[in-house]
Length: 383
Image (cartoon, rainbow, N blue to C red):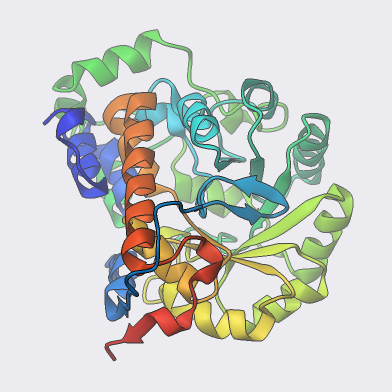
């Protein structure tokens, strides 16, 4: 399969699987326990049908919107994800450039493989930093101050990873960051020489947003589960979130909210946005899909805080359905990670072109000229 043969995100996944050693692919593709929640994240969109209007005069449409105070060309955010240079040597640089080309919000993780400062200098489009609260308070303060100095547009505090989910595919493969070659996976690494040569001879792997404080930032091999379970602050609570919001002082979001009660608390501490998210099904298996929670959370806090539906997005129609339910925008990580792993920046750009085409075509077929015309009157539920 070649990039030009990829006509949807599922095709990008197949090309990524073809080009990556299986432990690396399984890290992207896998989730917690039986991976039921990961599957539900996408399947939830199939439980709702779109009801189109016709003869609406849709020669000129505008799919843009405002997300956290900044204009976005599409109601789509590229969610922050970790370790991107493991999947392709360009890593976050490729995704950032693609996001700028398409006029989209782009986020980087605390566990990014490119620094806060480099990303800030690289692109002018809206940038978000995903903050993991570490036991090391100096590290937390350092990352916030670096984001201030680099003029990042927002911080999203991740609230659903105080301990790691049980990612059984990673347990079977022994995947670590940086990758550690094991007897069971050596053949797969050996039979993907292009990935291996890039990994060995390109820029040395690092986690530069951590390297001033922890050895895991300088190339020490560790599993994600081990990192989360030893480095992150299990005692994090609402007081922690409120203090981080105060210390940051800028646009602030909580990523990982799934209940009405937590959405209300987010409003009370002055958050600007919440991301309805279950971490791509990688944490609590058996939890609800984000899309299934949008309506009740919007009904509880709509108009007081922005609501972003994060997870399972594979089609432009998924984005439109999330907006019909009342979300400000939709977001996703795997939808561009598969493309990054498959072909670097050209892959991400192709994935975004496909999503843009699907959103715009869907709007025309729905009979809307602007995304704010999408509401629940355009949906019917199967259940």
